[in-house]
Image (cartoon, rainbow, N blue to C red; front, side, top):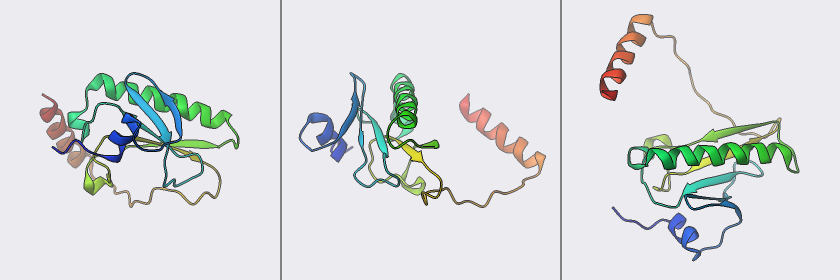
Length: 139
């Protein structure tokens, strides 16, 4: 595994960032390619390329800090009407930097951001089968 990412450089203080928050486990900073104004990234200091590699306690901290930043976004200027939390796990899911990170995306009416999908309507039997496969994989 190549340990280098731009996030490693930011964490080490070797690359510029506009920091919002930092503790012993995570760092949060402004995304340099925001999808909306105020878009923040929350990044664990210890690199994990995927959720499977991420320590569960670190993952929990990632979301605790994301929740705090979401509340701060709702209280800061300009105020947002909502917040999306987004984490892409794997290239097919849209992950571009292979160091787990949580996007905290403030939302306002007409901001142009949105998830576009075509929901399906599977039969209950198919849902039950999928649930059984996932439950079995959990152990």
